[in-house]
Length: 263
Image 1 (tube, rainbow, N blue to C red):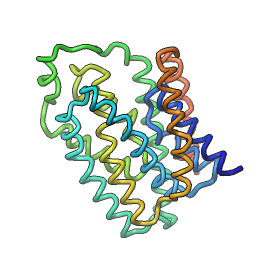
Image 2 (cartoon, one colour; image 1 turned 120 degrees about the vertical axis):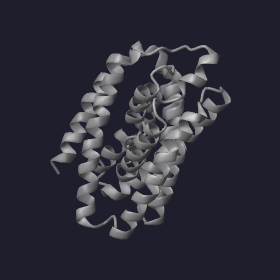
Image 3 (cartoon, rainbow, N blue to C red; image 1 turned 180 degrees about the horizontal axis):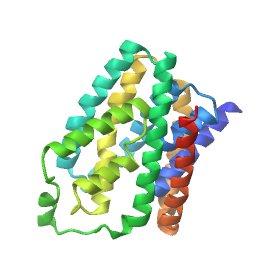
C-alpha cells in the first residue's frame, strides 16, 4: 500500500511537471519530507536522480526538434557542474546525516522553495510578454550574454543550490535564463533549462548516491508513476489556463518553503 502511494506521488509530480513545466524537485522533495517522512538527505538525493531521468527523456525529444541552444547550456554548465562537485565534496567530508547539515539542508531548501514560488509567480504574470518567435539569423546573437561571466556565475549559484536542495534547476533556472538572454524566445529558454538540468542533476544525483543519500527502491517507484504522469500532463497542457495553475503552484511552494524554515 505504501509502495502504491509512492507511485501515485510520482504520477502527481510528473503530471504537474508535464502540465506546467515547473521543476519536479520543488514539489517532490517537500512531498517526500512532509507527507512520507523521508529524511531530508535521502529525499534530496533520490529526487535529484528522479529529476535527471525524467528530464533526460524531455531533452532527447527537444534535441530532435532542434530547439536546444547548446551554447547557452554550455555556458551555464561551466559554472553549475564544478559548483555541484565542490558542494558534493563538502557534503561528503561533513556527512549528510549530521544534524547541523540536515538543518542547513532544510533551511536552504525553504529559501529555495520561496525563490521558486517567486519565479513561478513571475512567469505566470509576465511569461506571456516574452517573445515566442525569432528569425534564425538572430538566434546566435540572442545566445550571447552581456558578459561571458554572468551565465557562469549564475550557474555556480544554481549548481550549489540544486546539489544542496534538489531545487532550482526548474523555475529559478528559467527565470535566470530569461534575464540573461532576454531576446531568446520562451520555448528555447525552457528547452535550454531542461537540457542544462540533465548533466547537473546526474552529477549531483550520482554524487549523492556515492555518499549514501539515494533510496534506489523509492526512486524506482517514483519513476514508475512519473512517466505516465508527464505524458498525460503534457497532453493536457494546451487545454489548461497557464496563469491560474502557476499562480496556485506559487502559493503551494511558498507555503512549503515557509514550513521548512520553521522546522
